[in-house]
Length: 237
Image (cartoon, rainbow, N blue to C red; front, side, top):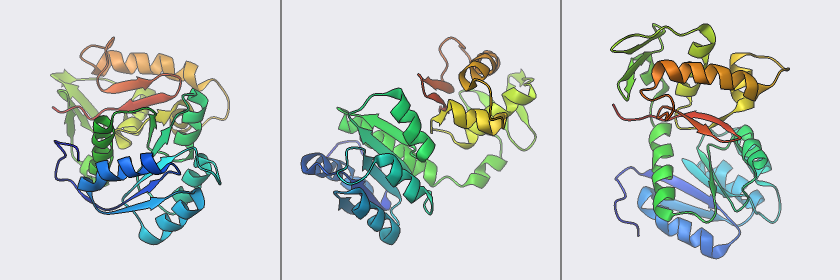
């Protein structure tokens, strides 16, 4: 058992991995976080368990014997909003983009620290339990106040954002803690089927960071996932 695990608990967590040793290690590490730990060794079995048990969080390994991890993500996402944390020994950025686009919430590459992994699972459980309506009230991160209802951003004084900058900030904040791919952000903000997402985003993200970050060269709020996309980190006030 890992030390320092907080009291947040899930009713059910599902671990889908065909390697018994890794699956058992993950189950043991996450047991303090859940009243019921379920295990599956194939994608098909995992989908069936996800449909019947309705877990609050799913850990999914990509190297399954019967189907691709992206296919499992897409199937589960048809009827479940539970966070999906993907495990993989593959490091290709294109694959990470594919999984996030298919509905995964996080992507952890092997080998990984169990302590860090548990912390990331806790963060996803915490975010999944935060009511969406809480964003109807102003939120404060690292001294930055964001009011989505009034469309206001303040740090000591008001910060003026362009329409595109506001749309990017709103989209990232609504999915705080989750990496959104370049294409997902591009589609949400521009709704275009043409153009280069990375080129568009790079310019506007630079301008947005310059306005809202304390140190734009070392951003804490809008973090880059190289080659993949961006995520909003919920930094404590």
